[in-house]
Image (cartoon, rainbow, N blue to C red):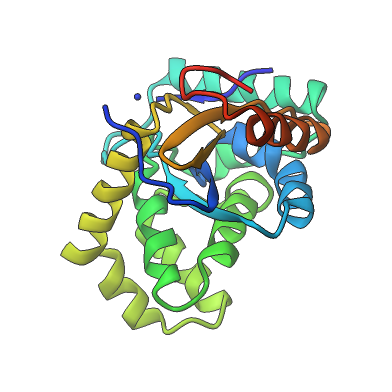
Length: 226
C-alpha cells in the first residue's frame, strides 16, 4: 500500500523501547490507517512508550490548490476507498476552497495538546476533513473544532499562532528527520539508541505487532525494516 510522502543522528530512546508514530492529521493514508492505529495502541506491550510526531505534509500557503493537485488527491481518496474501505465525503471539493496547507492543522494538534486534547484534536481534524466537508487549512475551522472539544477557544487561538507552538512544530520536524521518515504514516521503534522502521498495513495491527517483537528479539539496526 501507499503512504503520504514528504526525510543524522538517531534519537535517544533510553533503555525503554519507544514507538514513534509519524503522521499528519490531513494525510489521507493516516486516515486510512486510523482503525489499525487504534488497535495497535490497544495491543501494544505496556513496556513500550508511544509518541506521536507531526510530520508536516504541506507548508503554509494562501494560494488555492491547483486543479492538478485537486484531481490527484481525489484519486488518492478513491483508491483508498476501493482498497481499504475508508469513508470520504467528496462534497469537500465543492463546498470548500482547498489549499495544499497542512501545517496549520499540525499546529492545532500542538495547541490542543496544551489543553490535554491532542488525540481528540487529531481525530476531530480527520473527521472534519474527510467526513464533514470542512477545511482544516482554515484557522477559523480549527478554532471551531477546539470549541466543539470544549477547549478554551481564545487560548487555543493564541497558542495556534504562538512562537512556542512554532518552535515545537519545528522540533517535531527535526525529530522526523532524525528518524529518517519521508512518508506518512510511519512507525519507528527505538531502544538503546537503535531505531528500526516498523512495517504496517491498513487491515490489521498484527503485522506491526509481529514486526515490533522481531525487532525487540533481534535488536535490528536502524537501516533495517522489521
